[in-house]
Image (tube, rainbow, N blue to C red; front, side):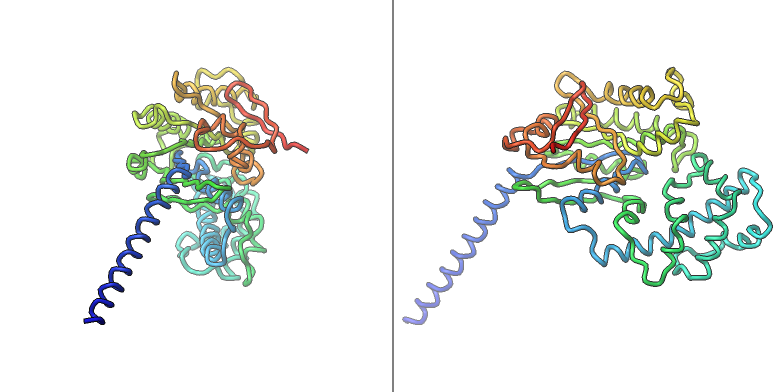
Amino acid sequence: MGNKQKKIKERRKKELSKSEKIEKALEQEKEFQKQEIKFLLLGTGESGKSTFIKQLELIYKTGFDNEKRELYRRTIQKNLILHTKHLIHGTEILGTKIKNETKKLTKGFLEIDETKPLTLELSERISKIWEDNGIKKVFRSRSTLQIPDSASYYLNDIKRIMKVKYQPTDKDILYCRIPTTGIVKVQFKVNDFVWTIVDVGGQRSERRKWIHQFDDVSVLIYVVALSEYDQKLYEDETINRMHESLETFDNTANNSYFLRTSCILIFNKMDLFEEKIQKVDPRTCFRDYRGGLNAEKAKKFVSEKFKNLGQNKKRKVKMFFTTATITRNMTKIFWNTNYSHIVKFLFIIDYLFLSDSFLSYESRGSVVEFRQVP
């Protein structure tokens, strides 16, 4: 009888302990939700959203482990073959002349399986093809050929990448493009707060999935590739990428879910934009543009178009101009987000606490420029 009562007491004790654990877990979840700031990261394909996420991993997490670096190593080497195929195909489309020696090297190249390992022999072949001035000329016309800007970064450094013990550097990984498919959630602990960044695919086929991520979003971040004003969509070469981005932002920012949601516009790829505008007039995209080959005028013109679509009586839109492959630029946007001046333009002051400032900033309308305090 005594043993039976003892067992009943032990069982009740275990049940109570289990109940307390569940209650504690629920309380922790409530606390977590209070401290969680949810960012929805949107933008059209190749705008630089994934690079943005990778930068945050470098700034706020431990960076890239060996397993992830190995994944990027295989992707980079695969992309080298694909980039070379696109360049060779580009010579045919544009009718660009290449040397006879290069022609011999390109023979049969389009049939190579890029999923197989990059051999030393194939690397040397790619290196020699890339040295041809005709191939370089094709690369300069990449806007019309769906050849990524980052192709030259890897092709110029192929001798390092072809080494047996090659391991991608942080910079290699930042330049590496792996299209986002589906929905990716990444969490960062920043001081006492958890940031949940929800990244969704930028291609048209992926955008219908955005609607499921609209609940409890604190901040909408929309990334625009400023340099793509003369480029066409990968999925539909009749549509200008900048026009598509404007339409997508309009549909998103003015969706009933987002009318009161804080909004940040990131105009990315400034380095490529400043290089391109020296040769390509933005009138190729905007017939009402009259600023000529002036980077500042074009930057203001494009950003105002986006801001006017997203801004309303209940919401201001903050804008940043950046190059996502440069870590210090991303730090400007998300560094020390719990400090009061950052809070003001994120419009989430009720989540965060006032503290001393480590950054000096100057606001001109809705544009914010940063300076480090010495």
